[in-house]
Figure (cartoon, rainbow, N blue to C red):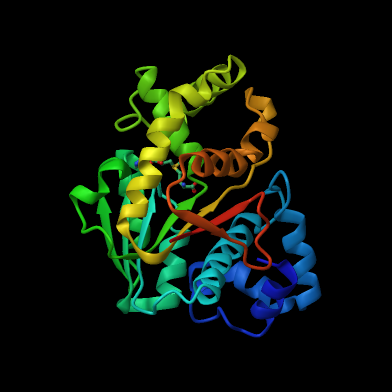
Length: 285
Ligand SMILES: C[S@@+](CC[C@H](N)C(=O)[O-])C[C@H]1O[C@@H](n2cnc3c(N)ncnc32)[C@H](O)[C@@H]1O
């Protein structure tokens, strides 16, 4: 979302009882002490390409940027206050359940499908404090319709997840176990493999059909006029590990092109403040 608007909302105290509860006392004290202009400047040093996390409190300020941006989207898109939301590939990131918790509280229902076992355990610990109903399915999101009824969800979240899905498809093709290994131990291997498929022009053939199958399954999960929301960002330091910021920053455009080509019955909407390079919001028609 627009950083000036976000800084104004922070200054007005909008998130004090909700999203800011999940921040450290130090970060909350810092936010209290800053004017809206200072908060906007601080956020704009972090939320850029690539994301800069070296400054103090940056991780938590980025967390607030994402949780508030998703909350703002739920408001802007008029998602039901009794929202049912499915997130694919959450890993141990609790931003989307936090945003839904702030929006819908105990009336909301959050379901995620996540494959990696260790990250799922951390996710369980982190989300235990939330009021929103959390269900974790330890399986591939491609099989979500085996667990929940189709046509019943208000929104599907792909938070920084296109890359995770692509990496997992390539890892499967290369015989790398993404379920039982520590995700961060195998990530360099996965990124190297993705780059090799990309440079040799094999990425689309290897990934597109499975990826589109997942998107189509998520479409089946949605109610009519429900939303599928994708975001992406590039973190600093990719080049140092043989990965590419330019490649990673293009993930939304890549997914947009594949989804458009597949003609799935999804139309893009463009809310103000959500840059199409980093966000893609699709409505089921
Ligand atoms: C590093 S975490 C990413 C968390 C979150 N998307 C983020 O970027 O903050 C990657 C997770 O995505 C999961 N994943 C990738 N493809 C998946 C799929 N098709 N279904 C379920 N989980 C998947 C992996 O198992 C892993 O737990």
